[in-house]
Amino acid sequence: MVERFKELGTITFSLILFTLLWEVSVRLLSVSEFLLPAPSVVALTIYEKFLPLMQNCLVTFRETIYGFLMGLVLGVISAIMIVYSRLLQNLLYPLILVAQIVPKVAIAPLLLIWVGYGEMSKVLIAFLVSWFPIIVTTVQGMRMVQPEMLDLVRSLQASDWQVFTKVRLPNALPHFFGGLKIAITLAVIGAIIGEFVGGNTGLGYLVMVANYEVNTPFMFAALVVLSALGLVLYGVLVLLEMWLIPWSIGDDEQEMTGFGM
Image 1: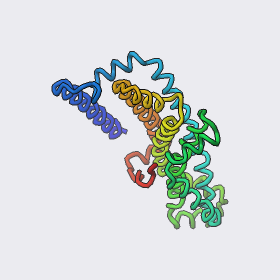
Image 2 (image 1 turned 120 degrees about the vertical axis):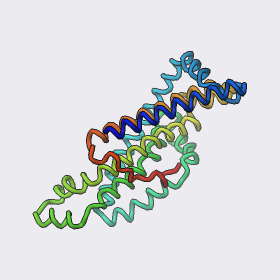
Image 3 (image 1 turned 135 degrees about the horizontal axis):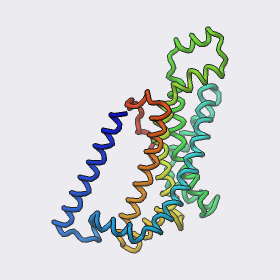
Image 4 (image 1 turned 180 degrees about the vertical axis):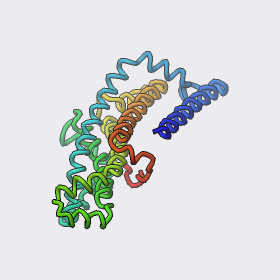
């Protein structure tokens, strides 16, 4: 726990230092706002446009959460099916891999055609990018049980349900939360992709509007709010992990490679 707070303090200090260096550099070099606005200008823009930023942030938040929850439920169900059935593994894994390999930017227009320009298309894109890491890490966690432990509980005549709840599930939790932390960040990206392609609300839409209007400070303001949203969602999962499985804190075993867009 102490180490986590030390890491948080270090991260906060680095962000403050980076912001100060950014502000000083822009002022000293007289960089135009068109190219790179100073942090103070971005902060002022956030203050002036606070209401529309928060309204659109709520839209992106809703799309992200709905897509993430869909990925969570279907990802866990798929992982359990894969672990307990070789046939289902052979049937599901190729489909899951294909769904992950296809660039989401390429299928976003199709989703807009199929389900319309409402929030559902953005939710589906957020779901498609978030469920893969949940499946992979959950399967990995449930399979990385020591054979001796499985032999022990089976020798005690434990049922399949008891093996799952007492052995496989606890062993999978650290991996599972690693997948969740990856998935929530990808869900934010997925929602933004949908808003880029065919949105009329959301932070991604505001970024596109600012780009068309060549309003760089407003674009940076939207990006700052978007980054804050992603950090908050990630932080909630970290706190939940610390509460549910404190013994796993500090084990950085999850790799973020392979979960690209």
